[in-house]
Length: 429
Ligand code: S3P
Image (tube, rainbow, N blue to C red; front, side, top):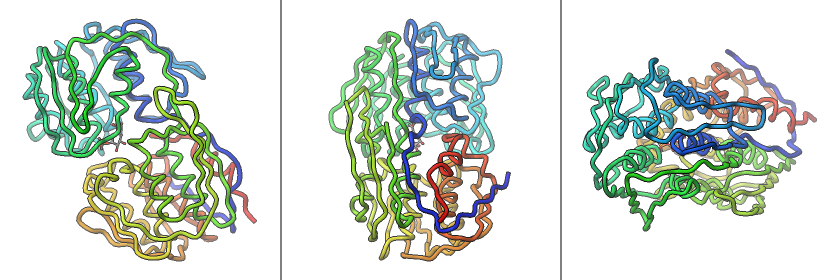
């Protein structure tokens, strides 16, 4: 589906409550299913990815009720999950795929995980290799690298696993397997990645030990159903933070935004670039929450690399757009993981932004952006990637010419109401 956007000297004013955090929403369904008793989830993201997670657990016999404001999961525990009759279809969701594989690894039945074209090209051996080491029988295209992947789970042994990639999906998969292994599993991260799985284990009454980048988890724990309040997704808020920072004369407030310290890299980047940003932290729930107010200002370039990368990995497409409006040369490095996201996000960002007049080049592990650039209209593509689609829609605010985005429907993966939220705060002058 093509979507055309054409703004005339817009300014952005008002307040938005972005939809629930995608990572936390996935995990709320998984832990709700793995706990005994009822779990109530409020603020759940009803995007395609999280709906895929719901469907996979329904296929394993879990009753999940959806109403306007709540999701109710009737948990069955690890041992209550049933062999699915149908294929487990993860759609476009890498998080569902990898975390689910960790759960399936310890379950005494056969299952087959499939997904869309993008999932079928994303590397899974990073997960399937260590799960095989723990004792699961897993196969898939290219020796377990690509979906469809079949799993015959069963008794698992614990491992000490030094993660070759800074990936929360990989870490979480091994945690889920470790929860089913006999004994203590140890995981060592190269850099700290998002810790929603660890927080949720504690929220559901389990325990996990964390010492710098070393995580230990004991198998055989039982969880109890809980209420989960999902905060707004910082990765969705990021589009409006950047829009407010770069569209002259703007002031935007974003309420109820999750500000987990393993996800707040974009806040550091905005501050370093000279953004006019106010962060008000609210009461600390299982996950920290904040209200963010951004006003447009003069921005300068920045260098981004090293341990901050996992804290902003999903925000790099929109940070690239931000950098096109900053004075100087922005360098983004150590971000090769971008190549194996929903699409190759280094190529997608660079090639699509070039079409709109950005001065941007790809490197092996990131990109170099020279700013400020005057953007113009054009025909671009989301390449089936929700975050590329939304970044290009924000780029359309910077020109009075038409920007036509092919494949715009991809945004429904994480932010189905993105367009109406954008139009609710953009006033043409
Ligand atoms: C996620 C982890 C990250 C992130 C993805 C969600 C998660 O992926 O990019 O959008 O919920 O654990 P990686 O683990 O591949 O870095």
